[in-house]
Image 1 (cartoon, rainbow, N blue to C red):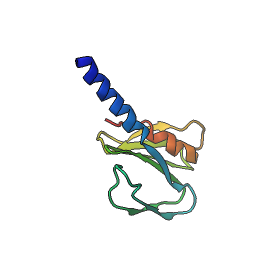
Image 2: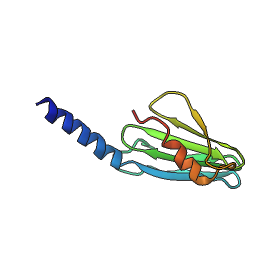
Image 3: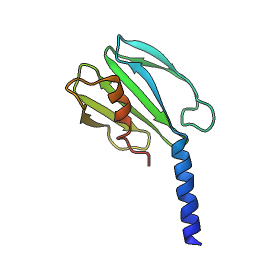
Length: 115
């Protein structure tokens, strides 16, 4: 019986993680404002808002029903930063190359916790 319950919990967790989606908000150009909208279904964001990005900042996020995690870089910098609604500190790690790229922002949020 315990194995069945454990299997059901793992299957539910796997299905929930499949619902997660990555969204790029800022692409590292001049400072912009970008609308972040509700994706529908059972995602973390319940009301849309406007994100304001500084010059040279690339920002991406990922969400599902239980968490939201964010990754950001400065395209003139050397480190990527990640944070999560689950808690804990913002973490920083070096980018793959000497200058960060927009794809590093999306890679950053994968380092943030989901549980």
